[in-house]
Length: 239
Image (tube, rainbow, N blue to C red; front, top):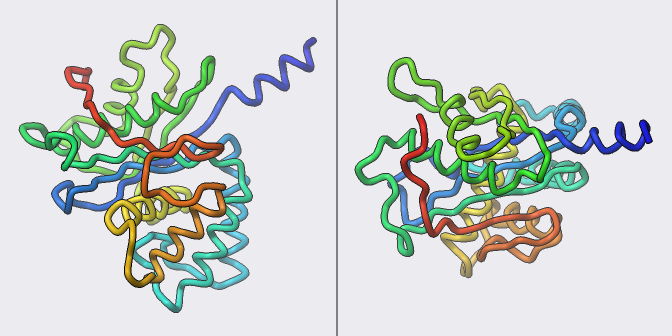
């Protein structure tokens, strides 16, 4: 009985790594907040370090960095990510279907709200989680991470998010993976039927196929992938 409880306990914690599809909330109809949920982030980090050592790649693994020369190493990264225990998660803001959520509100607060909703929608019952988010500027004396934590825990009988911090993605490979995922989702939403396949599109399709889905063009809740278009924004949560 004791061993069974210990085995179950190993699966009650997870870490989220979350980034967004672009720096500006006003760029195009689509805005994506996405990333990974990982139970063993240290193992994935080590595999990425091994990939860097083997290939000599020292730049960021960001979607915007994909080029013909970098395509092979990004495709290897996709294989590393797919072979790990990650769950791919994403929230899509489609302003053709939803009133602009950034209108009349601080951009950082809206980003926090979307990130919090994304986390809450991917927490299992009885689970405790931590979140690592890309750094974002806020008003003085306000922590973006603490804001996301408060918003996510708001209304829960037992708070599930034990910590949320911001990190410069340049220093964190798993946040760069989150950026890659957000970029891939955004790529498919903006160009669902491209006439020609760019190197970025190739990586996006590789990522989808490696996780058992055809694409990220439409909402998906299958296997290890959970992508949803936001149709309603929560408001009035604590900041």
